[in-house]
Image 1 (cartoon, rainbow, N blue to C red):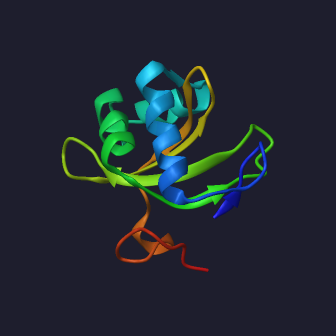
Image 2 (image 1 turned 135 degrees about the horizontal axis):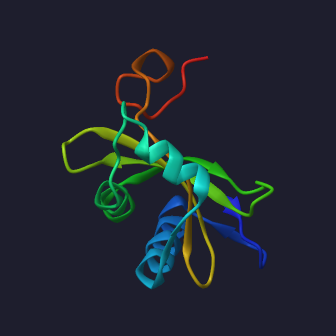
Length: 116
């Protein structure tokens, strides 16, 4: 759980609901995310990102991020590839901060935990 901006706590399920509600209004791809998506070794489409947001799960939560409350969502894209999406929901849109294909050497086999 994390504290929400109004006080109290939010579960991952509540945060995920907020992400999906924000995404239903509008998705804003920040320049860094767009550059990462277009890399030849990634080629992550907007539909890949949408699938991750619609069906994925929060694996890391960043309630004190300087950009506002953000989190890392893990899911599958169109080609059944694991994809990580860093996003920040707000009242008017969902900001996509970054998106990438997790590197197996840096993550557990299910890509949910960082290897330290």
